[in-house]
Amino acid sequence: MAGKRIILMGPPGGGKGTQAKRIQERYGIVQLSTGDMLRAAVAAGSPVGKQAKAVMDAGKLVSDEIIISMIAERISQPDCFNGFILDGFPRTVPQAEALDKLLTEKRMDLDKVVEVAVPDERLIERITGRFTCAKCGEGYHDTFKQPKKPGVCDVCGGTEFSRRADDNAETVKARLKAYHVQTSPLLPYYEKKGLLMVIDGDRDMDVVTTDLIKILGA
Ligand code: AMP
Image (cartoon, rainbow, N blue to C red):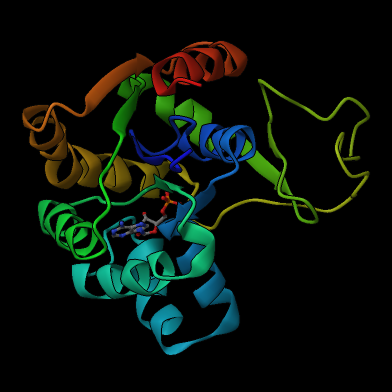
């Protein structure tokens, strides 16, 4: 079976990362998160990381040039031949156009673009309370999902947790603005291509996953 090639869209804090991880496991395809790649570059102190850090801390978008070359290199690796789920990319029309060009060169098509929709007023609460296990990356939330045993990760037993530097109320507002101004034009872009599906992301995570799997098929 040919692998699936999916774009997961949606506002920051809407659950894209969580859902993309589940889809990655369900379909055996790789999750390509430009946010994760950038955070790894910042942690490694690479030239890209050094350039991106201040922009990310301000909640703005990193330049198309950096993002497109990062994705072009990543998508060419053998583990992507079997399919991938893009999480947080594309975020601008030039990025979407660059992706189209890349895929055409590789004789690949997109299967689906799914928007996980969540109203703005819910996002600030969702983002500012979230934290992850530093060891395995499992996601938690101060209000919605505490570890079963306080201070211990349910999945791996890790006892260290981290919060993203850009998950604070001020930066979130800038990230939401970037989403509405720069990223939302991609919804009509993919709708015109007949690829777009929208699901309600403001529900229990498991229900959202079930809906996603229904849309993506066997
Ligand atoms: P995310 O983890 O997807 O929320 O991304 C975190 C931050 O990384 C964003 O607020 C941007 O500063 C940057 N970023 C991630 N993906 C992109 C992208 N496709 N284009 C521009 N900036 C991005």
